[in-house]
Length: 317
Figure 1 (cartoon, helix red, strand yellow):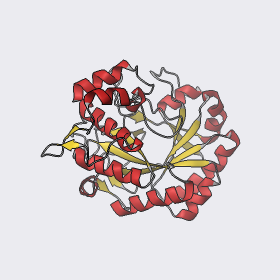
Figure 2 (cartoon, helix red, strand yellow):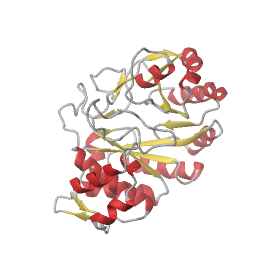
Figure 3 (tube, one colour):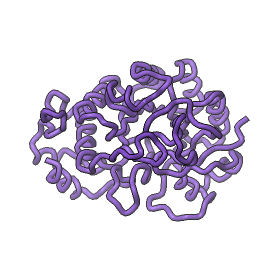
């Protein structure tokens, strides 16, 4: 029986479970399955990894304190959230816990997103019958080369793509959100190819920036530059909308993205400012998941001003 659940700090503050201030109010309730130990997988960047020495209350930069499930269910309506996003770590009994949590969430009448390691289609159909409408796929690495270096996982590169296809088969186009982390050692070309593959499969892409966390294997690695991340965000949007293709993008000899096959002036008119905001399930703004407060965020929790687009394109091209 599930007794505890982790709640992201911003969600806990919005629900009144913690005192504090948030720079941007989360519009989704971000929750995570509780397990007193480490995940069975050993991703080099993850706090929850099997060999991580980091604080288990964290995921990326965010603190996730544990609360009694009943306390969280009572407080959730106070947050006025548009959906629930349930993150999972891999441990014995995780699937049973997820099903129990989905049953507990049902009276709240909110749509639910679940980020989970690969499960069978039969279970995906059961999720669908319990108000789940989007599923996150933690591919993370943009190429099989990088996947093998940083994802010491029970699941292979091919397993993750098969899972993506299964989700689309069960839930429909746009229901699978493939998570990709920029800054794990991939080239821009590899990132573009991974995003294009997801869109060809009728999946979606949610971008994250690598965040070095003390106690993880990659604690001394560097996050991506903001300029590089902005180029990847632009590429994601152009691929999603079919406005350009990997064949039209321009790369240097090291695989760095240098152009999009569209003149700078046209790009400024084509690109809406929300391209630089969080791109995830409906209602997701994921405030300051990768970012340090007081710095320009990789993913804006709110849509930036239209004038920002011109400044960005001028800076990165």
